[in-house]
Image (cartoon, rainbow, N blue to C red; front, side):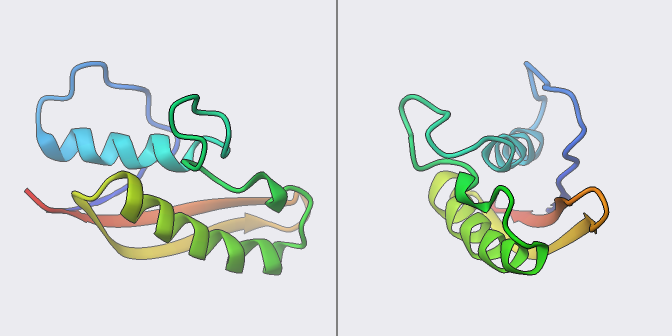
Length: 102
């Protein structure tokens, strides 16, 4: 099944399907900074991207997210990775679509 990650979704403490669980796991993986998770300091977004120019940040973020998702949630296969950005505010938000291997 293919699903798109909604970065604004609330945590579901009891996902009813494996697909919901995997999508939530991917959202958590890309929603934290590296070194923020005590037992997996490599999980998450590289904090050196803060204050980087948007073009450079997007390129590095794309590589970092793809590798992190592959390592931390092997049931999710990345289908597409794009970004919504606001150059005025300096915000880059990932739009991630994954296929869940059931």
